[in-house]
Image (cartoon, rainbow, N blue to C red; front, top):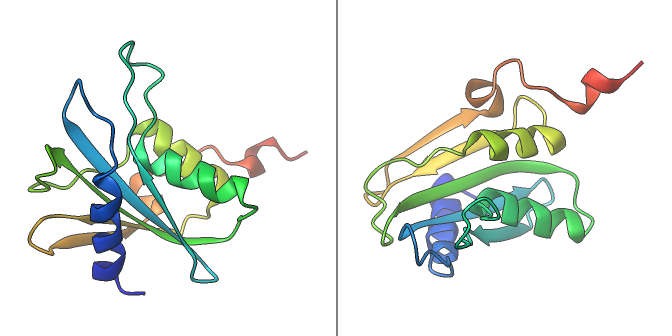
Length: 136
């Protein structure tokens, strides 16, 4: 699957976002190494802290289905579905990604005009805390 195809799926996922407070919709498309895609959107809450990001929604759906081998995630985000800027994952999402992915996992950030950034996780989370940190 190409980066632009994955970004297109993330844009479709963003249409399901529940964002009555910020109006900042985010969509994510998570690609497994076997080629399966899990979509996620952000889901806000009036008290804000229970809000769930699109990236975590996609990962949690995939993990629930038994997936553990991931290749890439495409992310788009913007006010009212206007993806004019890149929308990188928040710190919590970066840590969730690190739980399941190695440093070479690809994070693809998309925009309206089919421009994108494709970087490995290590560029977004250098020195990330991983399950290997807990090994004896």
